[in-house]
Image 1 (tube, helix red, strand yellow):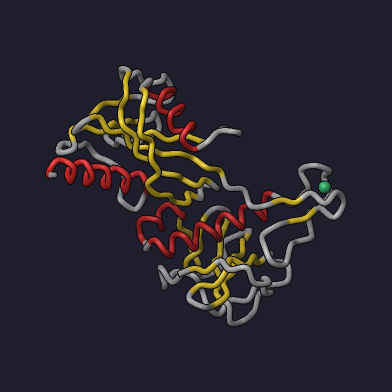
Image 2 (tube, rainbow, N blue to C red):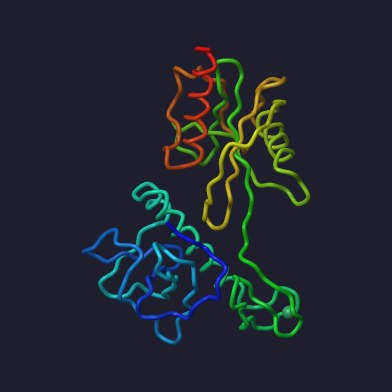
Length: 269
Ligand SMILES: [Zn+2]
């Protein structure tokens, strides 16, 4: 497992592990498909190696390449979500988010000075001119499974495959609580009122820096009215006759499966 820790960040060294990225893709060795992170790598002086924490007791860094080095190929983080275990996915998510932050915060957003100075104990860049601090960006998003008796609501967005149905989800607005975001997104996207909003689980979704916060809610009123351009189709589905839903590696799939289990269990008591 990854330990994030609060110790002083070490400099890259020979015995460390490395995650290698090319743009937004993860690099894998051609003949060693899923050996991530890598041992026996040493970044050159031009490379920015960012400390991610300790992976099974060993320091781990992320480095970004401008072109694909010889002997490597690239694979998407989203594909790796389905191919690797949750612990590896969380490590890669963190590496990807830290690397994106480093690339996208080269200059101060307030005064425009180059951001060369880094905090030695936490991931913070400090502007040497105006002292503004820049932290890795994390964008909270709510995702919610809604129950109405023995049915749950499933919806399909315009980008989703024709036969794939999922939960309602959306970004949290500035100044909003998570629960307010849940109620607002449901009202905006399908025109329903809900009650009994409760937290279930969360998952980092590093595409590029969302944190998905999962909830259950109960139907309280209104008729399904899909928002044009946002939702192609939304319906109540009986839990014993669900359409095609997202893979269980995603929080969306996990929420649906867990909600179905809860409803079934409640019926037998
Ligand atoms: Zn500044």
